[in-house]
Length: 222
Ligand code: HEM
Image 1 (spheres, protein in one colour):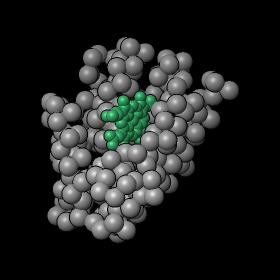
Image 2 (cartoon, protein in one colour; image 1 turned 45 degrees about the vertical axis):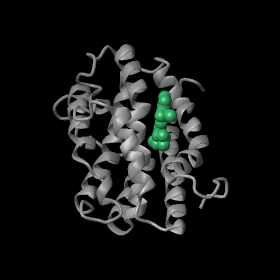
Image 3 (spheres, helix red, strand yellow; image 1 turned 60 degrees about the vertical axis):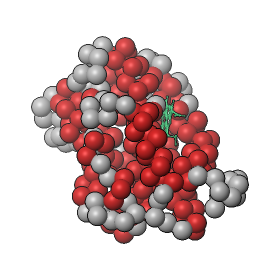
Image 4 (cartoon, helix red, strand yellow; image 1 turned 120 degrees about the vertical axis):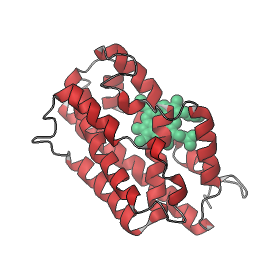
């Protein structure tokens, strides 16, 4: 499957290991470091949250038609859906008319377009995007929430950081274990699994591109 993975390695391990370096890159990107280091204002956090709204809308509008799909269907679960939470956060951050004049950054538009393309024509590719975002939100998202609450004074798990709060997932560790079991059992042959890994890398690249464009808008570290 993956050149670096011994035969028999669970797919959840293969995909995690394959994206590990890119994960470190995302985590330590200039924009993320400045944002979570408390060096950027609320506007930067709001701009970032706006970009997430475009990405999750693509993921979740796309999910509708995939519920019964044999490959992507098992991953689609109402407890994960984030669009309503993002809209509530944006109402808090930008006011009731948050949507007026809102446009994605070019990198965000490209990312959302790729998610939609997978949702429409390649369910296994959609799984790669689903994994990259939702498993990340259930993991590092909790660190981001904590830092955002401290940096900008949001109420704990309240408006502004609801995106990071999975009300219907009281035990994220157990949920992630179950999610990894779904990955291990994904309805795909080895070649298709390799393509999923490649698409996961592409998903990380899209995230990196969004961070770069946000970093150029809020160039503190420069
Ligand atoms: C400052 C930003 C970030 C921090 C602090 C962070 C932190 C973490 C932590 C602590 C974990 C848990 C690892 C484990 O359970 O062993 C994790 C997992 C994960 N993160 Fe992040 N992360 C960040 C950004 C991102 C970004 C931008 C993405 C991609 C969009 C991402 C995707 C993932 C994924 C997919 C996992 C699950 C790995 C697996 O167990 O398969 N993370 N992250």
